[in-house]
Length: 194
Image (cartoon, rainbow, N blue to C red; front, side):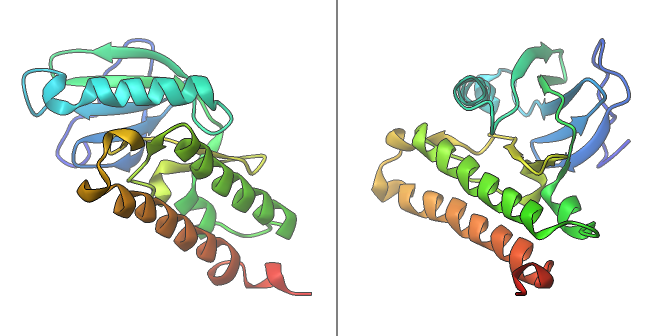
């Protein structure tokens, strides 16, 4: 058990390892896939905005698969819905920053560029992420970035600027700058040395 909930049982997806726990859902990784599990708080998918989350995730994975894992399937039962994505051999950005030993400056630069491109491409596709924290950013073995968990996302054009569009985009970019500062200055002070 974790966070008071049992680890979900999903046919054909064994050995799930929790990588990020949240109030509405949790993200697991297995040898086959990444699994985002949404826990029901109401009686229908609409009550949990799950349809919107799946549509955004599927659209972005089809349009920018370099930055968003491909969606394989959706599994449902009476307690949760699981969005099953391609396996990405990766660690979260938080783990990457904590375990920074032996990372070359050029590899840090690759992560920085990939992170900027990922959030930029999500915005170019017309979406704001709004939950752009270290647990939702995966860094692959070749130092590329993939973004997961679009549960707080929305279509940019559907949000009236008076209702918070600008702050939500600013939030994405402020968090991006925070992550970049962590990568470049705080955790890798030698990467900028001459």
